[in-house]
Amino acid sequence: MVLLVTLNNCSPENESPIKEPPPPPAVTVPFPEAMYVQNGCAACHGMGGNGRGTRSHLLSNSRVPNFQDKTTYIYGSTKEAIAKSIKNGIPGTYMKAYGHMRKQEIEAVAEFIQKMQR
Image (cartoon, rainbow, N blue to C red; front, side, top):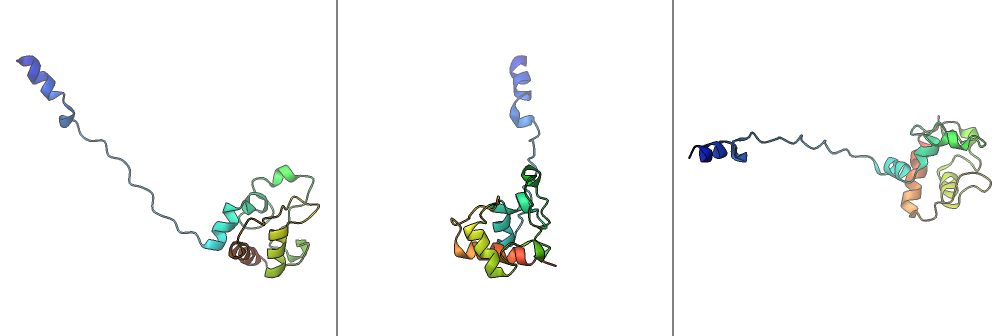
């Protein structure tokens, strides 16, 4: 009988429950910025568009454009020119074509890039 009492005292019901931490708060990212990040633009061009992304060191033989400086754009710094460069890529550079993106996604990224200009 003592054995039963001892086992009853060791039951999980008597243990204090382990509390899980609350989930982190939801973060809302504007669509243009989300498209810029999701499509890998930030990896080469950086989040601020300064041409110093996490992968830019791998492109040491090539100049990664600084979106903040309009003179670094090969085909122009208008929203239309940027969208065309995104869709078709830039031959002879690491900028590949993103023709798989929808028109509204390309325009959103172009708008985001254009806002980086100074």
